[in-house]
Length: 175
Image (cartoon, rainbow, N blue to C red; front, top):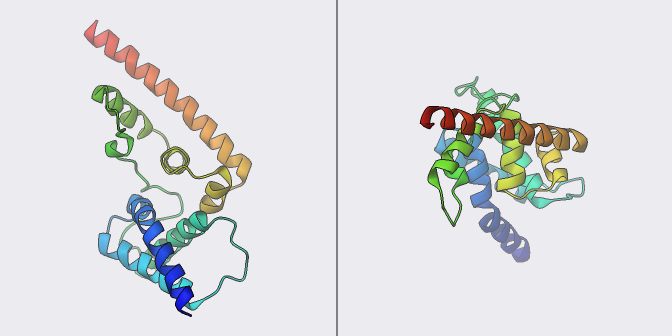
């Protein structure tokens, strides 16, 4: 029993920052988000999964997403969160890198990505900024593995087009 508590504590410490960061992209209410993360780990302690878990990270992210949606559905949509990922948004800060050479480029990248559809933004966030595998993303978003690849490919293509448009516009304005 003590080993299980320690294991749960290790999981909590390891994944809390990731869960909080991901959940904050979905849920604007900090208190609700923290409650849902606590409930998620309480549920893990009380119930054992009947199915083998392929990826702990993907399982926890998906479980948090469900818990947040269920919480808002039960509260009769206090916040307008739905399965279309309409509220998933990446901020400028998501793109800050350790060797920040050109802040203007980063702003243009953030502006271009925030012009993408929400589903594409979420896949880019999970794949590029959180380093999840395509399988994990497929599990979290409940879409086929091939759909993840296709959406990411389309997102990157559209992103490149938006960046090119931004550069062309900049050059036209600053001649």
